[in-house]
Image (cartoon, rainbow, N blue to C red; front, side, top):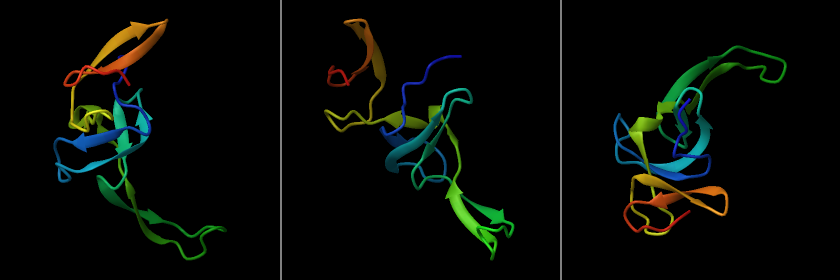
Length: 104
């Protein structure tokens, strides 16, 4: 399993698909599937059957998982979409912005 450069809570830009160009926050990262769930991106409709909690049932909309290759991390320092490098400092693996060179 290869590690992903994107983590939960990161700001990302969508590179492809119907929501191309959107910037939003990562709600969940699914590293085993190499997918991420991004807030307000790839919305799908889901049918809900009536339950004790939801007497009515009906149709709800929720975010679907998209492939991690379709998003690019936005650097918190320079606020630009960037590729990510890695650096080990004091035994910790840090992410490095390829544009500004700062760690985060």
